[in-house]
Amino acid sequence: TQFAVVVAKFKPHFICLQETWNKFPAIIGYEVVAHRKRTVPRAGEQINRGGGVAILMRQGIKQIAFKALDTNLYNINEDGNHPEITEVVRGEISFGKEYTNKCILASIYSPNPSPGGNANRDQRVQTFDANRIFDACMQGRNHNNIIIAGDFNAHHEAWGGNDAVADDKGEDILEYCMLNELQIASNGEPTLGPTRATQPTAPDITIHSEALIISQWQVLDNNCGSDHFPILFNVTIP
Image (cartoon, rainbow, N blue to C red; front, side, top):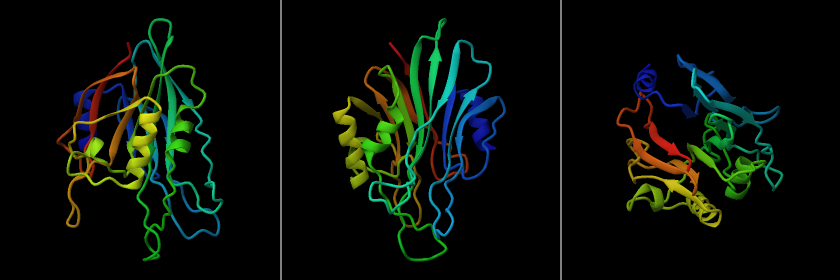
């Protein structure tokens, strides 16, 4: 596939995928170290929700280990009515000669809501709560290093450029980051291509702790047959 060609060119240590649906992602030379299939309707429900998320690790990397961690996100939100549709997988990366350097890596997919209307469409109710989602990503850590990469379907000029129109989810994410010493890596370029009805936007976000140095963050120009463009960046832990 086109994506496999891009992966072979850049050889990233880790790959965070969103909207994997129910397919088990397979790329030669990579191991799936965390995977969650699309959240499907429970008995009696008439909706679909989610899209599937995964983390892949390049095989044969020396002095790097990955341990998958539970997220403990509840299936029902605080109001008790709407199922959680944001999907998260995460794990702890340990590296160095003694594996004492650590960093949590999380892959997130938070779909757009599409309530009511056509019964054949996903009828999602958006109940995104940055405090609950990000606290779940960071729970159990005894260090400050974290990277949260994902398709949030959230918009704000802080990462989408001056033409971006902020929405409630984008405001929620930005406020959480400001209050919890988290940075958002971006160069203002769109990560989602245009459609007949919409202009290019930047719903894909890379969030990281201030202690980490994110460099060469870039949106690749090959969308690999998707409507989203891959994001590539380097990470340095001082």
